[in-house]
Each structure stands twice: as C-alpha cells, then as structure tokens.
Length: 340
Ligand code: AHG
Ligand code: MN
Ligand code: MN
View 1 (cartoon, rainbow, N blue to C red):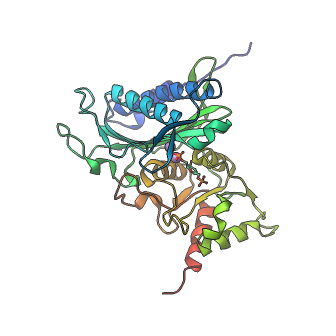
View 2: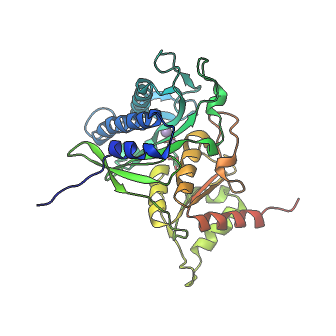
View 3: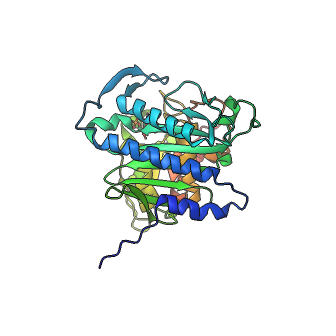
C-alpha cells in the first residue's frame, strides 16, 4: 500500500516552536494565518483565466503602476488574515501608501508587524505565468499599549524575525525561515494542506544561471554590463557561458536560482537609479531567505539586511542568490567605479 506520510505546515510550525524557548506560540499563529491566506489567494489565482477577475482594476497604486484586480484581492485577504490572527498589530503593504495600524482590541496589542508584497509579478497574471507573495515579520518596537508607528515598519532587514514567500506556480509552494534555516512546503490540492517537500533548503554556493531584464542593458551601470559580458564569455573551467533565465516575477526567478544555483539582478539604471524593487517588501524578505539558505544578497556594496530603510516604499538595487555569484558581481561593481 502506498502510505503518504506528510508533515503539514501546521505540524511543522508547532514542532519548531521549541526553537524558541520562551515562545508563547504567537509567531506560530501568525505563520498559520499567512498559510491560510495563501490558500485563499491560490484558489483565486488558479481560476484567473476562468472568471472576470483578470485585467486592470482601473486603479493606480501609489507607485504609479496600474493595479490588477488580483493585487487588490490578495491585499485584502492578507490584511484580513493578519488582523484576525490577533498577533499582528499593523501591516505595511506595497499597495497602500501608509502603514495600516490595527485598532481592533484583539490585534492592537499583537507583538508583531508585517510588511508584505501581496502579489508579486502581477503583470504576469493575464498570461498564466507564475506570481508570488512576499512577507516579512518584525517584532514591534513601540511598547504594547501604544499604537505602532512608521518606525516599527522601518527596521533593518537583519531585525526580521521571520520571512518568506509563496509561489503560485505549476505547484504552489510556501517557503519560509524563522532564522533557523529555510524550509519549503508544497500545497497538496487534494487535502488542501501545505506539506513539507523541501526541508532545510541550501543554495548552491556557485551557479550557472543569471536572471536580469536585459532590455535595460544600455541603461545599466558599467560594472553590471561587464559582469554580463563575463557571464556570456566561454570558459570551460567555470562552466561559462552561463544560462540566462528571466521570468519577470521576482519570487519565481529567485526560487529557481535558490534551488539550482544562480543569481538575480535588478540593478539601478539611468531611468531608475535605485532600480525597481522595494527594500521593505521585496529585497529584505528575499535577502533573509537567501542568507538563511547559505546564499547572499547585496545592493552592490552593502549586505541588504544592513540597510536602514528611510521610507516604506524605498527602492534598492538588488543582487541575490548563490554566494559566490553575488560576490563576483560586487567585485565587478567596485572595479568599474569611475575614479573620484
Ligand atoms: P510587482 O508585481 O509586485 O510590482 O513586482 C514586479 C517586480 C518583480 O516581481 C520583478 O522581478 C520585476 O518587477 C520585473 O520588472 P521588469 O519588468 O522591469 O523586469
Ligand atoms: Mn513585487
Ligand atoms: Mn506586488
């Protein structure tokens, strides 16, 4: 008989609670609610081609980008789930100009704040291409009893208590870390549970994949142009030329490189000096996962997790993935700096 022995996400969260000797289960409850919201969003995404949910909602988000209906839906679902968890006192999302401070009596004294990109890669939705959700959890700074403030959400990435992402792909996966390695769970649609499928993910230190929007090539910094040339040059010893893979969904591009070995690049360019990706919602949580898996994440000079965010929607150049590939990019950026 084929016995199907599974560890569900909720089993795993409870098992891991012992990593926190004084934990009261608040973080566990929060993660559990994120898992539930992910299942709701997954259900809607899997029907995107069938129902009148695809297409532009007509709104423009605060970044000046057109918002898809699913962006709005995912935003509402995650806000609702985190509010009802009772463990989260406020949330900052890519879709809202300012942080949302919960005033519900149960939630307002929650220990954690969450920063989230509810739907990442949403321009891909109309074309049945993988999208994701990215989240970050911090301990509140403002004492309980007071309302959380902007600074609670502007903590350095190194202060993250947990972070992760959901990838709505050919399978739906939830990957997260609480600072003790990275674990991945695949949604089994037949039982509606995320099941441990990728325990203790370790990213290869080297890789052969680079992921960048090469349409921006002419606007890229000289150091990045030189690095891309290096990737394309033939060298048997280091296995070059490397392979280029770019989906245009950070979660999907990063996830593939995390498992196979590779590097994701979104540099600053002439038109967007800080690049496109948001430090708080995208770079920090992905960097946390990269490092917990033995990889690296940099803005070209600094470890992403060391950057003090100054505003919620701040952007940052971003290089993340296999450790040695990120170092190599940094060395190209340093050596191609014009002399001052
Ligand atoms: P979002 O849908 O949350 O705005 O994020 C889209 C991001 C990210 O997922 C991806 O890596 C990047 O945009 C792709 O940008 P380009 O189309 O400029 O390559
Ligand atoms: Mn995004
Ligand atoms: Mn988004």
